[in-house]
Length: 291
Length: 291
Image 1 (cartoon, one colour):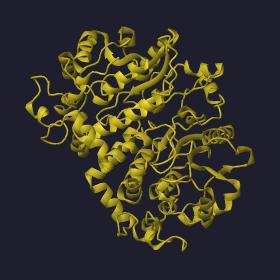
Image 2 (cartoon, each protein chain N blue to C red; image 1 turned 90 degrees about the vertical axis):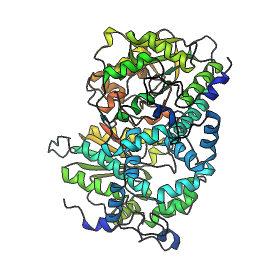
Image 3 (tube, rainbow over the protein chains, first blue to last red; image 1 turned 90 degrees about the horizontal axis):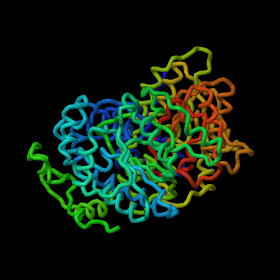
Image 4 (cartoon, each protein chain N blue to C red; image 1 turned 180 degrees about the vertical axis):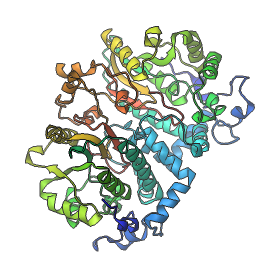
């Protein structure tokens, strides 16, 4: 079917607007006091790196982009400026607000089983100093140099997460750390967490030999499930991956959580996992994506 | 547990950075060539409406904010500028890119059952002209004046969705329109869709009497399920709500989809629903949120 030519001249705010709506609506369709036709608009939008990359970031953070591997070349500078600038700090701080306002309304039972799960990389710890020297995720992931960086154990805290960590402990939550890092990195990871100001967590869960080859979602889901079997109630989850709990308090609902997610990362839906927290809080991360 | 005072002086990129990492890392922690301590940073971030509201938008679009009812007062101008400006158009266009690159890889069976579901408000049609005159979602939703706007049937198309609509039809998808609007608005809605340039859809599904009081997720899930029972394979879903399919091709997985979601909107998780598309594409909408 032909794509009607006339849509190219439809303005984003149509000028065929009702007579009951004021003239001012017609005057400011896109930029103040400027009427732009769709063709000019498309050129403006796609030519401007800042605008293009900000919107690319939107698709990444909402998962509209699905599985992606590399930052578009033209967006490397944008991502670098974002990560080093005030916006990354600000976005993280507003996620902190959302997390805290949920956490403050959780009724803590006092049996030591009310838990909050944190991812580590780009959640508790910031690898920005590493990625700054490695093109902000514009190249292929280099496991060797990243492992060297992990061994240094000097990644700084993401300040919003450091604050959340201690506020949650103060509220009575037990903190479970659940990371895609491997067991051989346990001592470097512990050292780094202490270096960054974290202290007194309940558990630090890392990938062991049996987890090799599992995608992050399956691995993390299984670990959360084990924690639930130990009696923990996972209220919140902080991660840069966007995950949502399918919940239902009935038994039939419960069955759903333990459905084995197929071990293939080709589908965005695989990211859901099971045994999810009641609420998940997604931190910003336009640098990389590990499903 | 006391919250350590020392974290207030931790820089977002710690200056205690490894000697193996270059001096330039240390010099540009936040704004170029400027080291900011955490206290100054927090003030900068929370005082600046533009930065605060852009981050508020992040929490809304990722659903970190959960259920929310009104734009913060200080963000009304920001939201207005966003909706009327080039960024809303650009964000929508990049979602179009994501949607199309998925759609082009779907194998169309040719039996007329490969389907794509579109929401209407803030997806196919833009109500920006209405919201521009009603504070961009800063007030309470006024059903009476919104219904009058719907009756006018003059909402313009969101250009990115208009393009997607025709590209999908060209690829062989059947288009199912699934809206929270009610049956009594059917003829105004059809008139408006034609006015905006849409044509030749497969189904237009609206709320009937039995849907009164259902939250949007339950209502939409039930309608998608009916469509699936009629044999449609729902590949894609375009909506301003962020939804993710829990998928599994096994029978045990299938059971999960038909678990009745409890009819209470108090939990963000209720938004998930069932009988979801293989991929869902979230469109921008910082104006309002109807769960």
